[in-house]
Image (cartoon, rainbow, N blue to C red; front, side, top):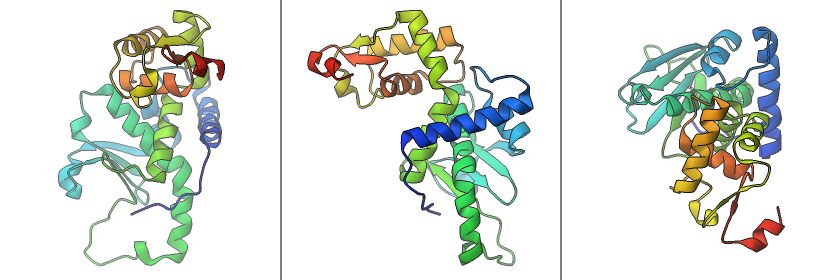
Amino acid sequence: MDIKVPFRKPAEIEHMVLDLLHKYAKTKGAPPRPPIDVDDIAERYLKLDLEVTDLKELLKMPDVLGATWLEDKVVRLDSSLEGQEGRLAFTLAHEIGHWWMHRPIIEMEKVTLPLYAFEEGRPARPAIVCRSTRKDPAEWQADQFAARLLMPEADVRATAKQVRGTLPVMIPHLKALKGGSEFSPELRDFAGEVIAAGNFSNVSNQAMRIRLVDLKLVDDANDPQGRLLL
């Protein structure tokens, strides 16, 4: 189903992530440090059951990556993600974002909408289905949540300063890289250094590239005017 979510600024999503990490830290007994253990957050703190299965076959959707069954408190990830630690962790963090931000909205809708009416003999369907080809507002918010959960700003900034100093790293033609998702040897190398030095072992290089751009820890070497605006 489509989740109708309120508009949220990145700063609001950041606050929600920090709230989760703060509450999780109390149960853990120490502040979480990278690699952020999203499995433990899901299972020990949120009390969710995690399964890796053939979701594509189960839901008959060729592009599904993860899904959440609210009533059963189950998160299922597609088996195609096995062996891809970065993508697997990001997808789970994405589902945690849905649970933390959007579950209350869906629970409220259950009171007034007949979408969850029980039908005799019909198998339970997930309330949240995440597909690689869809990026509606709820999916965008969950992606933003996942990035901030796996790559906390303070940890990324401290590590970037450790490996490259305080000034932004200059990347040729940065503005043409579509938010860091496109390939650049310089940006790839910087992301790899931050991942290694900061112990972000469950984060993909692409996710870190996007995070470095988002935090303005890189700058466009071909745009001196833009640097004046940072």
